[in-house]
Image (cartoon, rainbow, N blue to C red; front, top):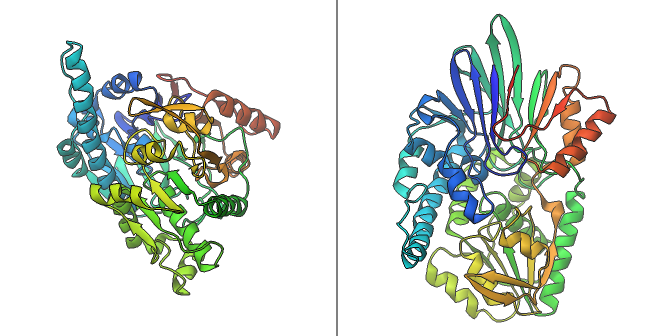
Length: 464
């Protein structure tokens, strides 16, 4: 058996791992690489394998860095099934169609600039229609249901606690008379996060393919992050400013809305206008409401006690239309505006940042990891000037970073994750992390004598 590390290897985005086993090829994830714009098109356009020769695709969750290149994979010839949990299928369908729309819009802008330089036009990575075609290949599976994906390869999805529907993927493989268990973590969540259940820990795994995004740091307790979130909101309201939050449409947006509803239910903050200004986030929230049975007990109790429906409240407005989005600019006084994208690279958040970044009464709140070279990273670094829509702006708004809200496991949880199956482990392969994070985690694993740990390079493969 060979495992090829083709994306999210020594970096955090563009997840792709190809397994060759019993004459079949199984792809784990097909994510979109996100980073320096001059690199992204070529990296995402060109697969390091032949899509037509892949026999199955297993998807851990719907985030674009794990799912976003699926329509391009199908466009280039992949025609077999795409397996994911029921909630992931629901979310991925809306996210991929939205991504197709963005690809088309972005390429129109790029081609205008190319035309001015006398360069030929280029095609979008994929279109809305390509995404629709890809969505027809999805097959829903339930958590903890074991099925055969290719010859002598049994697969089980278990809850990874990262976003709604997210899964770790267990592959029980018989090959050449031997049995092996490969446990692919996907993105590992954290204990005691709102809405979500805690991650299922590995059992009897021979090899872990494991994320290490925060391998170099622990997160603060979620309650401490909640307290800081509340303090930033309260402080900005008191000085009459707006709170602008770039947030991923799936997962983070719903978590923030739930936090705000909890604060209002406890009378911790006054009733001020709140907006979720992202059609994708609104569609995702509608899907969250369909899967309440997957929520954790705390959230279910919050709903049953009649405090809120968790994801709606009287002063919260979900704005779909462009007109509604523009009208937010006319709001005077304090307000909370949650908008996508989470790294502030595309979407309506750019308009809200442009309109509010130079007002010192306002706060821009960074609530998730930001990839290098993105506007979100520049804001998190508190750069004094930033470029938005090609125009330089002086950043006078306060920047608040709240890392404790991360939906990724911190170093302590990652260590627990590896230790959970320590006695059976023959090796760990760290992915979805930068070098400093991986090295710190490798050092910690060595201290507690957990089996050999590797940090593969892109295009590297291992034979096990």
